[in-house]
Length: 84
Image (cartoon, rainbow, N blue to C red; front, side, top):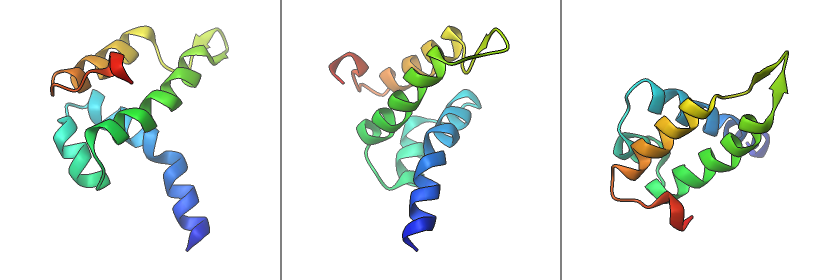
């Protein structure tokens, strides 16, 4: 079970990213994750920071626009990503 938990945890940030871009509310992410919005943001932010700097074939893992969109959606809940 530990291996499964580790594997699922590894892919959570990508799932959070996709859900937020698709229009999911941070509160829905919070409920699905079973953790606070702050934890969801932290998991996503750590992943997104690396993806933004990862360049493959001249393209970033995620664009600055995607990063800003998800950050803005988290901030809309009253959570202040700048305090992270």
